Image 1 (tube, rainbow, N blue to C red):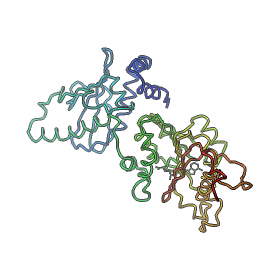
Image 2 (image 1 turned 90 degrees about the vertical axis):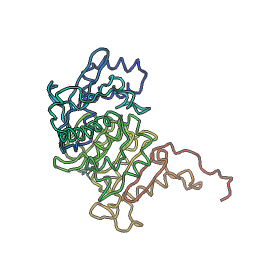
Image 3 (image 1 turned 90 degrees about the horizontal axis):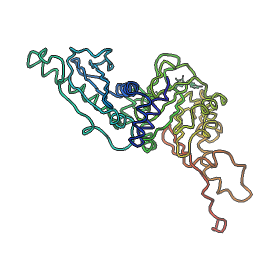
Image 4 (image 1 turned 135 degrees about the horizontal axis):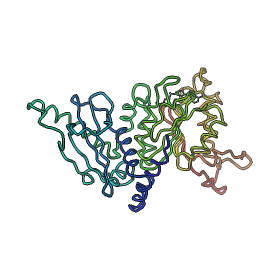
Length: 381
Ligand SMILES: C[S@@+](CC[C@H](N)C(=O)[O-])C[C@H]1O[C@@H](n2cnc3c(N)ncnc32)[C@H](O)[C@@H]1O
């Protein structure tokens, strides 16, 4: 999947109108419409209307237009009808000027919904097919649900991360883990940024399943590009703004190659093997490929206590665990406070870790410049 075009559109969505117009001219209206429809169908909630409904989305620019008919039937994914069928009963026609829809879907700044589009109820097809009052009421009830789902998907929206984890079947919230409120606390400030997220561990192991969290990040970061790395080939999960990479997180060379090709990253998440040595290797290699102000997240710290993952049930004596790494980072944070004569050779994390936030089973490490200067020698001690 070539994401260059969508990245250009996302970038232009944050620029001046003249630059956005130039980008649309370069990419062509048909390609812009294809990217937007792909995104809208991804964001639209799975329909639950029991009665089939067609919604028409029209994207116009400089006298030309692209019409797309989108069909919803309860329980099935939204479908883009191959050819606009003239005799379809269209519940709602939604008209956007391309620039407004690009900014609504990919832009930062104000939410662009009402006041940026026109809507027409039952614009075409034969409403006479709805013969009885019961049929009309059923149809309009179904149409309301379907139309609202497309209208919501035409904006960036602000779905809660817990809701997105549930929608896309990631285990980051509910049942096993309760991580998403912690993610919200630390990542909300990046939500409107064109971030690059790398997650180690796509899910599903050697099966067709997985990718839940990648979809969750794609939806949450509406301007972001999401990379998933897994020891298994998960390329069947590639789609617009999601790139899968096969690699082993215990192999420093493979991590470096991936990071040099796709980084620097704004967020790196380790939800891979959870083997303590692997967690430490990945952190040691990848911290250098996180941009300043970004977050490195380590999930499933419980394996620090499990010998089966290279952990140790006695946390005081354990040196090679994920929790021991976090404790070392506390020392890194305070390297400037070592008494004269007790200094040690500086390591990368001394200068580049600015915060360590630890919660039950998950840690957020903040990359910052850590060089404030120690407490001066004349302060009594
Ligand atoms: C817990 S699942 C990830 C779940 C996913 N992040 C989510 O939240 O939906 C762990 C994944 O890590 C992968 N994995 C295991 N060992 C690995 C390794 N050494 N390097 C990279 N990925 C690995 C597995 O194949 C599995 O798909």
